[in-house]
Image: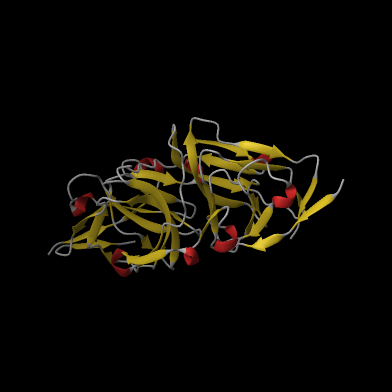
Amino acid sequence: MELHRLRTEALTKEAFAPFGDVIQVAEAKSHFTINQGWAERYHDLATIDVLDDGGRPILGIVRAEPRPLPLRLRIMERHPRGSQAFVPLQPCSFLVVVALPGEAPAREDFRCFRTVPGQGVNYARGVWHHPLIALERSTDFLVMDRGGAGANCDEAFYDNQQIWLEN
Amino acid sequence: MELHRLRTEALTKEAFAPFGDVIQVAEAKSHFTINQGWAERYHDLATIDVLDDGGRPILGIVRAEPRPLPLRLRIMERHPRGSQAFVPLQPCSFLVVVALPGEAPAREDFRCFRTVPGQGVNYARGVWHHPLIALERSTDFLVMDRGGAGANCDEAFYDNQQIWLEN
């Protein structure tokens, strides 16, 4: 079986735009001073797109264990009813594997982005993505997505393929 | 003018309940394993209460400069149209000064909580609070609150009083 190698790219606002938002200070469309000069607010960094057909926005924490590279990819998932944001609660890098909305993507259409400390991501509704890939150590992420009734996770499986994520 | 001294308390779910939620792994009502065993999700940690009268939930980052203690308190604010969550993006302690919803609070009704690393807070809609008080160093906080039309910040001023926050 032919082996497919996926390589990481730097995460930038422009490169990630088809998949969602990069959540970071440097990507703010606007910022302004608040709190009598004691703080700066970097404003409206993600498109929160949570269908209210019985759903609501929720906050949680996901504690992800680190994965060694190279990593064999076996699954992608998408959330048809809502966007999903992940922001690490300590400065760190992690990997983000995505593919455009639509039919289950071919492995050639996967993209992998490597974050730098201070970056988080927001997957647009319906964007295919691999489960969180933490590196180096156990990492807590704040997650903001949709809770409530209605199926909100589709999965695509790639067990019968050799897809390897490399550094 | 009589001087009022406010002292800090430890932040616990129980003590903070009248004011909102403590966002931390240890306070999760439920948690479950996700991502084929590679992550644990601590679920639904805050009551996101954002009036949709022209508003929507937004994510931003607030970079707060550290304040020295003792600190003279001169202002409290509240958001009548939405809850407001702050979660630091690095492990740190910060101070949270709050008072119950209703008329502008008397200084005797202020409470101050000190977080430990790994804790964030979500102010319930209408809860009076002092602007973020970072300690030690410049600190980035993810903020989730309400954006959109409609006045959403009331302020109360205490310039003519001596209210000092101590350690």
